[in-house]
Amino acid sequence: MSITNEKTNEFLPLILPPRGTGRTLSSRRTVALRGLVVLATVFASTFLWKVPYGIGPYHTHQEVNADICPQVSELIPKSNGALWKTLGDTYETDAFKMRAVDWLGGAVRIPTESYDQMGPVGTDPRWEKFGAFHDYLLKAFPLVHASLEVTKVNTYGLIYVWKGTSSSLKPLLLAAHQDVVPVEETTIDRWQYPPFSGHFDGERVWGRGSQDDKSGSAMENMLENKFQPTRTVVLASGFDEETSGLHGAQMLAPVLLEMFGENGYAMLVDEGSGYGEQFGRVIATPGISEKGYLDVMINVASPGGHSSLPPHHTSIGILADMLVNIERNPFEVHLERGSPTYKIAQCLVHTPDLPASLRRDIIRAEYNELALRRAEQELFKNPMFKNLVGTTQAIDLIHGGVKVNALPEQAWAVVNHRISTQSSVTATKGRDTELLISLASQFNLSYTAFGARITDADAPAFGTLTLSEAYTHGLEPAPVSPTGHDAVPYQLLSGTIRAAYNSHRGLSDDDSLIISPGIMSGNTDTRYYWKLTEHIFRYGHTDGASGGTIISGVHTINEAIKISNFVEMIRFFTTLILNVDESELP
Image 1 (cartoon, rainbow, N blue to C red):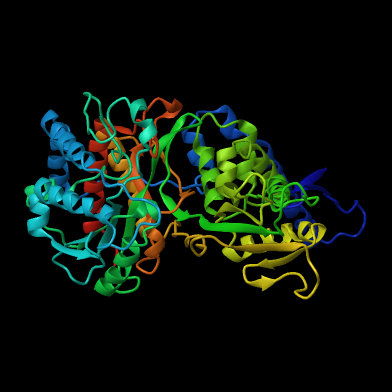
Image 2 (cartoon, helix red, strand yellow):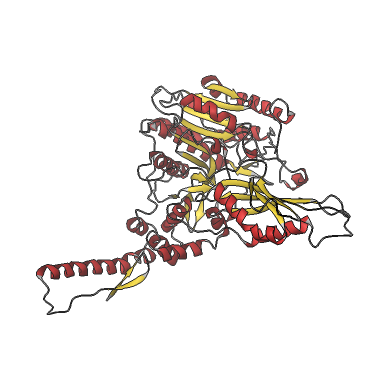
């Protein structure tokens, strides 16, 4: 008889002393106990791991795997329950839907595009369009502007403070941004409706910003119903999130810090992902972290001259060899226990259509290295998931040469990295530096990387190779927000997501969807808000319907949102504000 060591996947023989060897009663009891343990282990291995695959899709997973991606019940406001029901009934009316159409359509009709490398506010006239947007907000939401304290930062940054009756409670912080990505002129004729029309076709509102990020409003209707929060609610709205937030959120952050102090906010919810179907079940994925960011410029310089007398390799040729080498050597990627992406994988065990072998490996991965690697191999067949797990590289910019008959004296390219939550800016720089050492030697280049000399400065060289940060300093991966049983903000958010999803559909089923931790592959304004709270979530309750059947067009043509989803988002933020207001958060 043998059992398997789940950590090493090696078979361990069960050795029992032979009869007549003078075993004592104690030793016989010990052997008996060991035998029971073995039988229990075999039973668990034979039956418990196999139960989820042959029985019902939901209840078995919950019973057997309750500790893997634990779920919470819907969280419906209690003391604010009557108001929640009244507002919910209102949101279901056609009259409110048309009001929501007017709100969103009006916001879309004001182009608030932000561009890379804009000048300071007050000197670059392109910022002035945000003044018109503020005028629109004042007109569209009169009670918000009459009842809340409004602070403007760097002219166009907005902070709204809805004061609660208890100053001892940490406020809820909601974040958003007013700007949108520009519309490429050459693509306008490909839009089904003009990009800043705010057109409503009876089902969707069309236009730039309808999804990202003008699609949210809840406070006006709550004020109309005389709601007075116990806990303060703060809304922070930047105006250049699409261009890294240098003029907006970066300026808002110190003001928010001064208002309530470091870790002075109960929790923060910013724009982010939503919900969609995976493996036969709807999964909502609030982002608990963000990948880091680094742009690396690779610059090769070599002697110029007439192209009729070329060297063996020009700076462009050398750079090309280096870029090919980079693409041939992607970062090594592994799924690591405890990481946000590992938690995403764990939540898949609750889906009915997950392949049985993958479910088994994900369950065992917590203590079995081979199972973890098998799960990793299968999950990485989805390139999107693999990119979410590891540090990525994308060569996005390249330049070299000025004239066809002149040898290029310089050539450069920029590689964009999105850094794994398990890595760092330093590790990413180190890997890039190491990867090009042999080529620098091969082409006899003096090599400097991020300010450090890699080769001997006094040695004769054909040219130079320089690695540096392009445009901005690198950004470390965001801190990971707690999600355990005692992480009240995450549990509250999860229950709120389920309540909003269910109430919008008239459901009362805790099996309606799964809430899974997620991460953002890009970066939001929260990069500047890390000091405000350790409970930062990126979630917008958007409907990412399965099969690609919904038109969204975020950052591209035909951006649009279903008005039913927009109303559901309003319902979500209403439920969140009410739940946080009556919660036991400090």
